Length: 213
Image 1 (tube, rainbow, N blue to C red):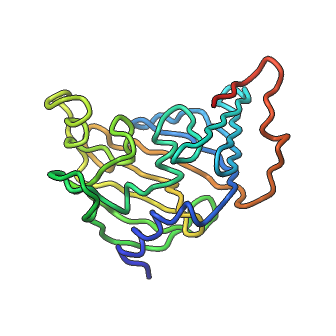
Image 2: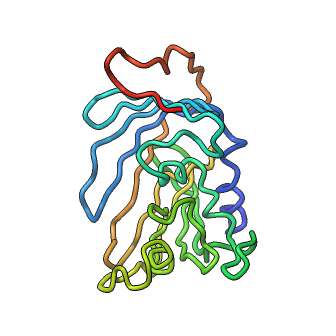
């Protein structure tokens, strides 16, 4: 049975575990789901997305320190969830310490694939890739991003449920379990890993999509 250290190691290992990924992602705010987005990603810099309206887009991010992004950095954090593995000292800004308190790690399935699931609580060393769209919502992160007291009526989660795909390290689920943001999560369903993806897949359709980079 995996433990907290195993979960952290898996969260930081995504860059070494796969080169192409085909998946569908959607998000839930409260209890309302967004439409699904279908994606083909070829590391290091190519992404094809079919959005919820069925429109194709191609994204190219050359020289970035992350996978190609769609809409926001939560997308990046899902694919490389290092923020769940390694923290920053809040006083010095230097790497160090555990970003999460981790409890009840267990083996589960997500979309038919082996996954690891745990209850987690962010510590003061949790540092999301982008504070405006963290995997785990907390008062500390909101105060740092938006200013103290920016959401005075919000009740922040006391715990989150996170789930990592056991083969790829991708964060396939991260749910706030209570408070104002209860139910907020994403559902990333992996369809294929390391399948061949030729250049033609990432060519822009005429008068459709967008190429960035």
